[in-house]
Amino acid sequence: MLRYLLPAFLALTPALTLRAADWPQFRGPNATGVSADKNLPSEWSKDKGQKWKMPLPARGLSSPVVVGDRVYVTCASGIRGDRLHVLCFDADTGKHLWHRQLQATGSTACHQKSNMAANTPVADEDGVYALFGTGDLAAFDKDGTLRWYRSLVTDYPTITNAVGMAASPVLVAGKLIVPMDNAGESFLAAVDTKYGKNVWKTERPRDINWTTPLVRQVGSTTEVLFAGPKGLTAYDAATGTDRWAFKGGGGSIPVGVIDGDALYLPVGGVSKFKLDAKGVTEKPEWAAKEMATGYPSPLVYGGRVFTVGSQGLMACTDAKTGKVLYTERLKGVFSASPVAGDGKVYFLNETGACTVVSAKADEYELLGVNELGEGSMGTPAIAHGRVYIRTDKALYAIGK
Image (spheres, rainbow, N blue to C red):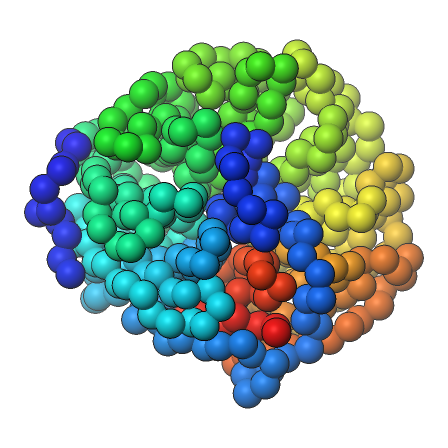
């Protein structure tokens, strides 16, 4: 049910027009995990190398997102995890600009590692759109005014996922694309960003899934690529109609990467497929079984593909040939996806230790291992020459 009052209110895609330094969604511009920023840091600790640090009211697995001078982050608190938080900070100074809270309307059941703030918000110059694992969806302007709110479990009562939901929304051509694969009524929907109403809604198989959609432009058509356990489907962003499907592109947690006319999917390790106007070629150009993923998504940067498995096995592969250049065992357990910029690749583990590796070397070249000493499962953001990391306790801006 669409709500314009506040009964629950308590307290890139090719279609996005954003500054180059913005990191507006999960895995940043065009969901690549890559920033064009320079002079990024390679060494820091809990006590040095930080621009600023601000405490967070509760834990979350979502990534911070950065647009202009705003950093947005979500959290979930309470004994049942039913208090939902959206916070905004000044990107340069760390000043706390606003904090809004919602009361969850859906189930808060989830895996013990997760919580209801696992979905990464998406932002633009107008503000931020936050989806939570409870099915609560809210839009705030950049000054914290609630623009609209929806309880998706009120609209669609069979929505359920006892393990927890984590797929993140994306913005495409003035529409908020909302992924809602679950054990109940599953769908992919485009929501009007001004009023929160459905523009279109497409049924999906009833199956648990945590992947975030990808977006690509094909001539005058924008496609939304959404992978699930039964394959990858491309939808017309304007109408929600199916354009093509690829049964070999199934997934459930890690997300693929589009790089030009290539699609790198976390199947069979990592496999590279050619993209054309009709979809994906059936056979991969190469498949690298040595590239384990697990929770983290693959990263394509500087002509190479980087992965880290959940248990820390990192691999670097030539993006053109699929030849594995090297592998290395990193310390810790990993849930966050690697990100990159300025010739560096950042691997953040679940204890807040970030391993920084040179992206240019043909063999493993360590630039630093940086300990924050706080639990962290959210993928870092890179913007304004800084690395933004959220932990269970705080939001850090690392760098100058």
